[in-house]
Image (cartoon, rainbow, N blue to C red; front, top):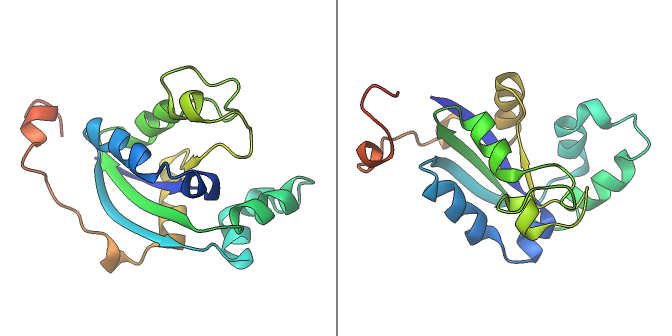
Amino acid sequence: MQKTLVLLKPDCVERRLIGEIIGRLERKGLNVIAMKMLRITPAMSKQHYAEHVSKPFYPNLEEFITSSPIVAMAVEGLEVIRVVREMLGATNGLKAAPGTIRGDFSSSRQMNLVHASDSEESANRELAIYFQPNEICEYTPTLVGSFRAGDES
């Protein structure tokens, strides 16, 4: 089992797609084990996007990500990092395949609705920015037997 961070960005919140995205994750059999709505501060943005702070596009990224509330989620599941990123589709919504979240709802590179961690290392670092350990509520849904075989854990 892996954990990943999923952020429903300001454009997702503003467009009222929160339920749609959460529903897709849940229908895939993934567990939302923590969730909260908040506003990302400039300091949090710099921490989250540390590798981009010195890049020319960063000021616009910070302006966007701090412009409206986001929904932060810790999501758990088998190979969840890969699975969620494949569900999202290509970063640029214009290049994302139909059937993916971005392919169905985005037509922008920056305003692409959702962020998801790209590795276990990133997931651990990013989850710590948004959640305290006591905010993570791990559990095994009673339906888990309907999503995967008993030896797939």
